[in-house]
Picture 1 (tube, rainbow, N blue to C red):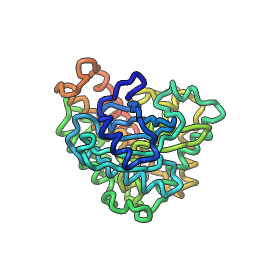
Picture 2 (cartoon, rainbow, N blue to C red; picture 1 turned 90 degrees about the vertical axis):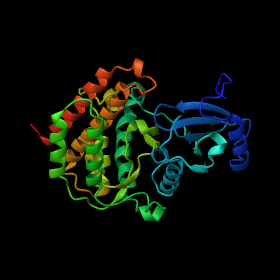
Picture 3 (cartoon, rainbow, N blue to C red; picture 1 turned 135 degrees about the vertical axis):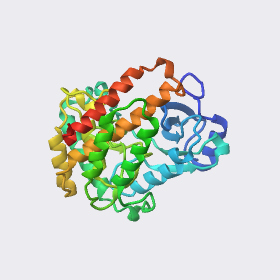
Picture 4 (spheres, rainbow, N blue to C red; picture 1 turned 120 degrees about the vertical axis):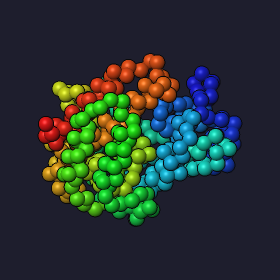
Amino acid sequence: MSADGEVPTGIDAAAVGEWFAARVPRAAQPLRFELIAGGHSNLTYRVHCADGSSVVLRRPPLGHVLATAHDMGREHKIISGVGQTGVPVPRAIALCADETVNEAPFYVMSYEEGAVLHSADESALVPDAQRVPLSRRVAEVLAELHAVEPDDVGLGDLGRREDYLGRQLRRWKRQWEQSKTRELPIMDEVAAELEARKPAQVGSSIVHGDYRLGNMISGAGDIVAVLDWELCTLGDAMADVGYLMNNWVTPDEPSTGTSAPTQAGGFASRSQMLDWYADASGRDLSQVDYYRAFSYWRLAAISEGVLNRYLRGVMADAEETDTDQFRENVDFLSASAAERLAVR
């Protein structure tokens, strides 16, 4: 139940409580459930236990039908594996693959105290003296993740290791062609440049896929836990670096879509972040602009797909959504990709 006594959508309180009694006996009952992250991604609930402690339950979004897109067993496996390293992640507690319990698989992990900096509003509350130390930890933790040998933590079969960029380019070119709502030649021009200039992949790392401040719990200038591993795979570590740099927005530049936490100011510069990452990883970052262009282009293709679904009226909040803003964001992302590659 939530604070007002209501059980949030997506939870069968009686069945989940019974499962907890057998699988998570330390969670003192009765349990109370609070939705803390919803939307079109995986749903996250804080489970309040009778003794005042908490754990977290993750399940797929409601109405979900494509199991491979929101694989709870895979996500549980990832945090279990990464949890064996120095990379801070919540502790994996238990997995329920039996859909009869709660109509979908779910898993339970530890609840970690701290702040999630989704936007500049939240990060403005971070003391000034903690912003640069937190920035450094963001860079160094990413290097720590990329240094992990997947086989050593049971993640060697997480995905194909080779030709990460080639596979991503083929996938998102196909997605763009299938979902575009108008002709946008710059997307095709950038795709051709990305293919022509594709760097050779150096090694194969665990790639988070969505590594940014908004997917971390932080506190006292440190990272308490890295969250949201649903896009994690094996491949080119530099893809995470390019993505992080695009999200590391300064106060005087526009962000991609919603407000970026670093727009509050006082955080390290991109060049500082790259220096820290290079020192910790030993990687050559001379082609980081390529990976930034790839990240912008990929996000443009993803955003156009979402726009397509809104225009077809298949999204629940279609009537309240400003589709012009979506279209402008795709234009901004594609132009940003072209700028990184000096196209046009």
